[in-house]
Image 1 (cartoon, one colour):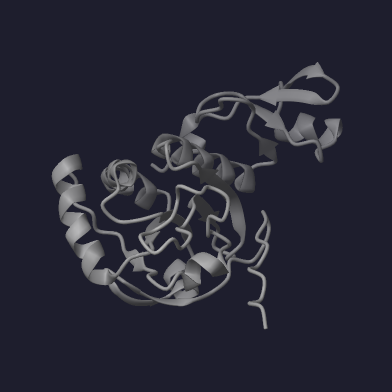
Image 2 (cartoon, rainbow, N blue to C red):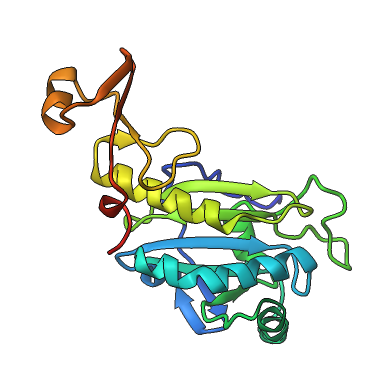
Length: 228
């Protein structure tokens, strides 16, 4: 009998729950999320050069995520002992003090659950020829809903500032009836949501600018977006 297909996760999917061993002990993922946000990001293997730089960067930026009620959690398809040794290298290289948990997914069960196994890139295999985890990023909100999925090739490091920017965008657009345009950062103008009528826009966003009937811009000060 063939193995069941991995879940097809899309934006809006409920993040599958799981129990796992991590560098901070045993966790139930949904309990770990609690009433906050979570960023789950995977790595193909411990002691890999690009991932070492990434984990160090996330560790150094963890305080900014915490201010936004966001927890970080990593995953790599190796043992707990391997993770603990790798963290020493990460902190040495980055000058960080990594404190968020890293999941030990040596049997790849969680990678499978989140459809993160790489069957396409022939170079992304372990010593036994088994597929390694794809370098994915999931942003999950307090309702346990997947709000963003990013997948990177093994040769390209992730951009932690971009992940933080998306968190700011998601939290701002959840709070206000707006969308964020290209290259938006907190403090830039935002787009009035298409669901808002012109009459309501006059009340909600006095002085908004209608560039086109379908493109209405308004101000949104950074202090209304960023944690104070």
